[in-house]
Length: 287
Image (cartoon, rainbow, N blue to C red; front, side, top):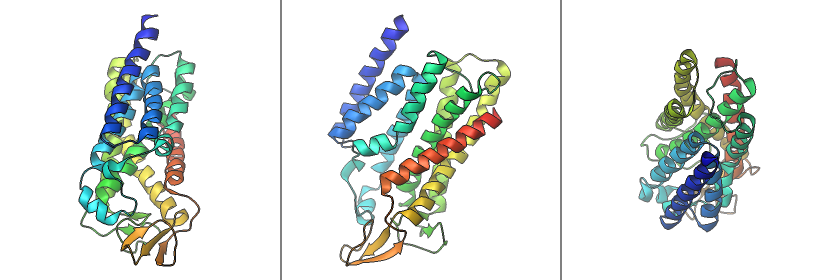
């Protein structure tokens, strides 16, 4: 009974403080702060390990967004100070995981579980999906935020031809390495918190360490899927007036790649969904 009362109170307090801080620092606008509070509360109230993965993604991504702001301002046509996100961006990066967290919590009766298909294939697949979700989110953000600062010229993932910085679907080695590191951080968070929140046999516990390299691959996979979608289903063009790469066609815009089917939020959502599914399947086979 105490856990049923205390954990939601702790979750509400932490979520409120972080949402206020993010709003004041312009990491989130008002709608983003309100939706962020809801997302954080659900994650933390239903499992500290879920909340930890979400918060690692949020804090590291918010910090990296502010690195090299002046350089990003010159490249990004939609640059916002502090990388301010709204409710659409918050939910496109967290809604799938939020649903999986609620389903997992319901199936396990609120108990945190190890990845173990022998115990439950369904729970293992759901946990794998949650891991893959945040590996994709973190991998894509780290790749974008650090890749654009690289001195290397991006290459379009579909043709490998050099493109301007800011082009959807442009990749660099630095960006891919950043995606791998970002995924590893999510996997490490899952494993470390699991030592304190789960109880499982020794051999199963040791096998959880495989989550870290798997998460690195998930981070890269998510980033590559995002880039592939961006290069094909998202428009990129060079505006001769603004002297920047833009995401919408116009009379002063010369097309670089892609067609206007998905916007950035839709690309993120689809890449997250695909990476979530792939990681979920991988976890069932590995664990």
